[in-house]
Amino acid sequence: MNTPATSRRRFLQTSLAGAISMPAWAAPLGANGDVRVAVIGFRGRGGGHIKELLKVPGVRLVALCDVDSAVVDKKVDELAKQNITVKTYRDFRECCADKDIDAVTIATPNHSHVLIALTALQHGKHVYVEKPVCHNLIEGRKLMAAATKAAAKGIIVQHGMQRRSDLGWAAAMAWVNEGHIGKKKLSHALVHGLRLSIDKVDAAQLPPATVDYKLWSSPRPEMPIMRKQFHYDWHWQWPYGNGDIGNQGPHQYDVARWALNDPATLPQRVMSLGHRWGYVDDGQTANCQLAFHPYEPAPLLMDMFGLPTKNMDKKTGEPPYKGIRTGNIIHCEGGYVAESKAYDNEGKTITKFENFLTGPDHMKNFIDSVRAGKYTKDVLHIRHGQQAAALAHLANTSYRLGKAMKNEEIKERLQGDKFGQAIFADMLATLVANQINTEVEQVVVGPWLDFDPVKEVFIGEFAAEANKLAQEEYAAGFELPEV
Image (cartoon, rainbow, N blue to C red; front, side, top):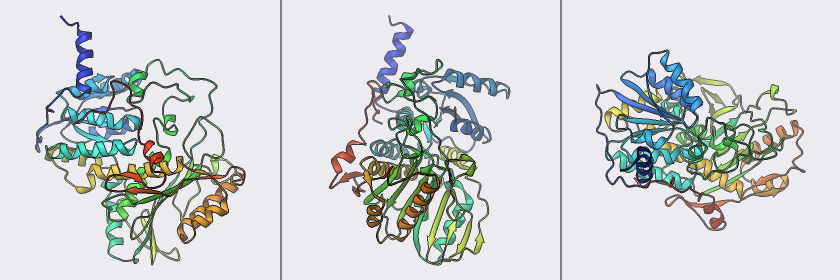
């Protein structure tokens, strides 16, 4: 006879390996059925999920899952004060297998998003997954394939790009498309937010005693912890995070794509440059980065700057561009839209767009789609999240293959790109204001990479090196399941 522990281990091993031949696809719940939701990962953004879900009529928060028992205990106590009782799980596989759960929301570290999403789909759950919806290009393709199959069965997979549910941005997009300020010239995404040093450790650190490090690491193998702050600072290390271009960046990338009328595919080329300036620490990702995505007829430019305005003094704040720090600008022939306002070319306000609230109904829209068994709005489709994440991955791939280059050489490379030259000059000026000498700490410039937007693989020169960066290591027992 199997012991309970043996049976549990065998169940987890077989379920993850794909032993479930027929997923228990859920039927649409209808307008009156309660939607039973579990939140997986809630030390940070997932805490917002909980608050948003509790505001939606007909939603029952029935389970919480987190690898950190201290996080679980704290939230259970908070909910108990509201007379809310939930099941708790440490292992996402057990949570996803619970038949009393209809949908899961995922706000774990980036590297585990797709593993958990696919496991949930394997068990017929609806899925809401935070940005970036995938950690690399290959995972993004797998998630899209699984979501397409799920949609045919009435299962929803929605991204966490809240601006897609923002009425203000929807009005701004419609206004620009009506031609009030002429043809679009550039879709400009800005992520100007301070990211201070994460410091440097002398040796590998121990995980917090309350964390199951094997589960936290999955699908990565357990690796030495080379950062002082266990939580959050994984964002700046390649096995787990994607830098700020893949952290805050997908929000702005998504709006930038929206401004270009949501191109059906990714662009055929990419180039990125930047560096990790201002300090030496255990971070690996760039803290300042530009990425060039030549969509037609108008290109997209990501402008990410993580240092202060001057003197490496965080009190000076982040450097703005046309009054915007983190947000989006749509440059057109006769003016531009910068977040909630439209201006002419002299900077005079033309009009203002109301209801800029960062999509407060985004979670409600997910629940509405779950009830309907189909996307109630096209802007909720997981492909928008996948494409936004993919743009960050394209940029990081070019950057990681880069080499140090003199400023004059970079200016020559950007010859003919008026906006690119202006933004690069702006970056250099702010670096100088922070007393950083780019003749000594040179800009790292990635190659122009050619990309097949149908197969979503790199082609041409540097293809082998570029495609290799999307092939990450998966720990035994935590391979991505087939759905």
